[in-house]
Length: 150
Image (cartoon, rainbow, N blue to C red):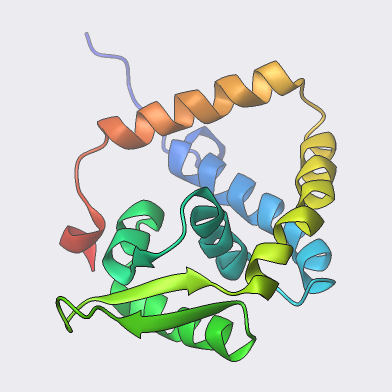
């Protein structure tokens, strides 16, 4: 006989991830506000710090966001002087996003933020690395893509 599945809220993986995400973003919010950043802007910068000059499509794939979500976000970041967008000379349909000097300079200012959030988690660095690896693997195993759900 198959084990019955609990429908209790606290037994749901989706709720555990949802609630943890909100708590983590709440930790980041005041720290990022001091730098004039929102959490979505922060994750865009994280990707660009890994490798600059990405197309909007590449950013969307990496962040699992649609261009409809990314475009207004990137416009605000461009207005704040953190990135600049330019059309490809090879294919005008493609827009490339690059860091400005100000966007690059913020990288050194976010390390203390990441450390503060890590400390607040009250987990060892190894346990957090393991959790990230497990969640990344879970994400890879789940069917679907941002294109199917947008």
